[in-house]
Amino acid sequence: MNIKNVKKQNLPTIKVDGVDETKESELLIVTLQNDEKLYVPKNEANKDYQEILKWVADGNTIQEAD
Image 1 (cartoon, rainbow, N blue to C red):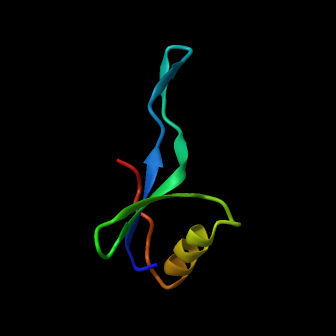
Image 2: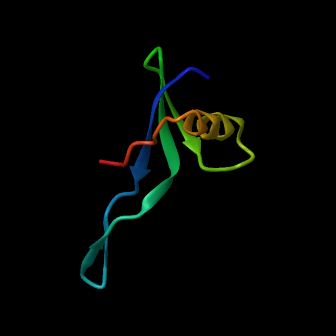
C-alpha cells in the first residue's frame, strides 16, 4: 500500500441528555499516492490496518478528524 495520508473519522454528532456528543469512528480514511481513498477498520487482524501501523512506526502521523 502506497499511503499518502491517514485521517481519523468521527461518527455523526448525537444529543445525549441535551448535550452534543461526538464519537470517533472505528474506520480510518486512507488516501493513497494515486488519490484513491480507502476506509480501513481499526482491527489488528486487517492487513491494511497493519500497513497503517507500519506507516506510523516509520514516523508518519494520523490526522485528527474534522
